[in-house]
Length: 222
Image 1 (cartoon, helix red, strand yellow):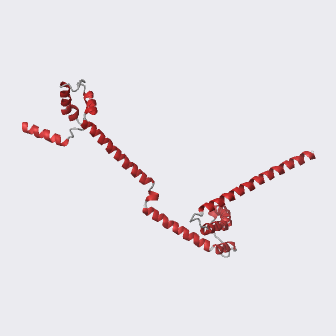
Image 2 (tube, helix red, strand yellow):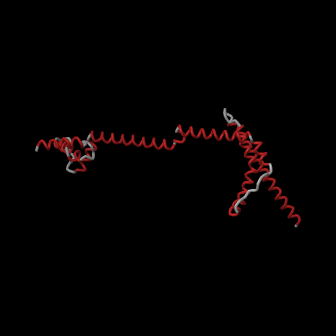
Image 3 (cartoon, one colour):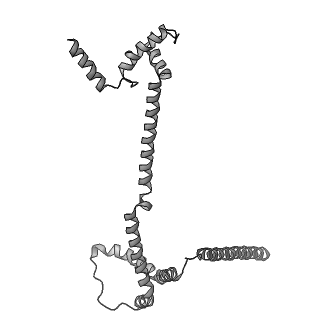
């Protein structure tokens, strides 16, 4: 019987951490007896009858329990850092993932090639758009006449603005903003906006002056 109880105690000791703050072995077992002995020998004068007081005193005085709390805090800090790192990786994956960067670079190369082709054949495109349509008439089902009548004016306005878009594409393709030229381009754009603002203010002043002249003429007529 003694042998079985000894084996049971060994098995319990092997499976339960004797210094864990949540372990009843610490709260009520050897630590309780240790603190009681310390009180009897005069090392502690505090009453240890209360279970809560024993736990609190163990957390304040026991080096093992304090070390466990420190290690637990370090582990939690490490886990929080790992979580933050994964969140940061997810937020910046678009600019840090090599595969995504390569895929988008390839797409930009395709767009650049397409825009270059448009710029090269700009004159041919404009000529073809300006030529009258020669061919069979468009056959549209009656159910779609309303949508077609609404779409064609919008299409006409897009085609009318198409040469301007081609000029913008040609400019973006021919303008070099590398090697420190970006500042000069931005300065030129800023100057253009400043000139536009000056012309706008002058137009407003002229309009105001014309309005005043009309009012004066109207008063003289009366």
